Length: 158
Ligand SMILES: Nc1nc2c(ncn2[C@@H]2O[C@H](COP(=O)(O)OP(=O)(O)OP(=O)(O)O)[C@@H](O)[C@H]2O)c(=O)[nH]1
Ligand SMILES: [Mg+2]
Image (cartoon, protein in one colour):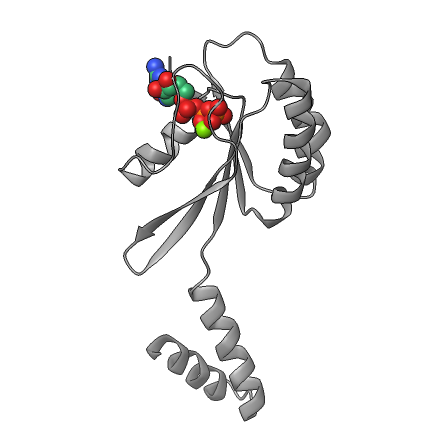
């Protein structure tokens, strides 16, 4: 790749000598960074519109949605291609449906969080019942945010 050739030329011009093995390692590292596809988790309470947001960003109905009942039961990955690169959205089941489901989803969210590059937590702007958002944030998400995980609350208009 031209960028990599320039990079190595520049290093040599600056008097830095690298052997073939080091060059290969650097090249592999650059390639894996260039081809990296960030993964974004779309979290939040059931019915806030997580799957609808993924569909809107994807431009097609790839994640099932429901007007009347908790819908997403398993995490679903949506690939958003942008030219030769892209990123992955992970649509997950929503919290706050029942205590049994919340236990299950607490485990799921905990398992997924380490592999995410960014977490979006969707909240309906007019929602006044925020207990499950608060409990999940405090018990599951906060420690990751404190360790540097990028996190945004996203307010969904009504
Ligand atoms: N008014 C309005 N309704 C929306 C919006 N986004 C989603 N909805 C509606 O909200 C309802 C729930 O949407 P879903 O996308 O299934 O919600 P979800 O967060 O994926 O729900 P779970 O999969 O159960 O966690 C559906 O009736 C959607 O049409 C929005 O921006 N505005
Ligand atoms: Mg859903």
